[in-house]
Image 1 (cartoon, one colour):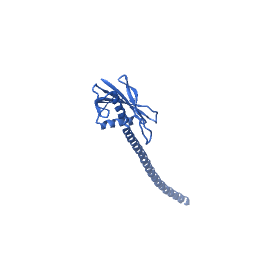
Image 2 (tube, helix red, strand yellow):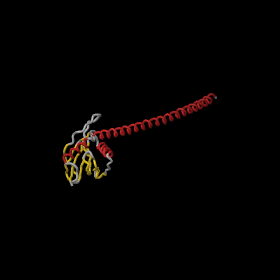
Image 3 (cartoon, helix red, strand yellow):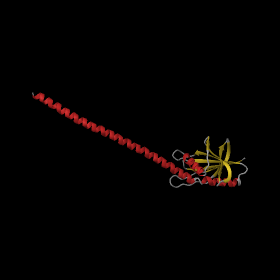
Image 4 (cartoon, rainbow, N blue to C red):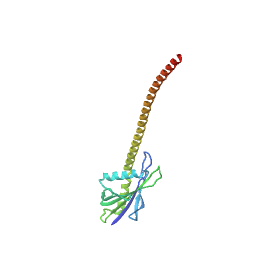
Length: 201
């Protein structure tokens, strides 16, 4: 069984401008073994990168299973990498500080002796595939930002609704208070009149 290990880490600039660094060689510990890998880093949080990966693989009609932080696509074909059936396993890891989140997405490829092409070509194709995720990551980030803004808008609208309801309740109490004041003024005027009549006698 030949084993090919690749790491993806995706790097983009914050804001509208985004780019990915070239994939580079590294290692990742998988099944208690340090395996050769490729890496590219993105300036986006883990959930954004994972969402982008899953969206890309869903477009390829590939299904995954998750275990111990790894996302696996077994017996799958990614034609831009190789026409051979391989097991693809991914791992995301945060690499930035709070407020400046970055993510490294690891990709491990495992296959048998019938893999089409040599390891060099496979690795090069793997790098190209991982680096090609940039549009998906940007799209994923936009989706998360939209959802975040929608949630914020809902929260602020609820605050405004509560303030209006509180105002209406206070206004109602004020109107009731004014009516009570008018009633009390009439009672006082009546009592004064009675007192004056008593004094006049």
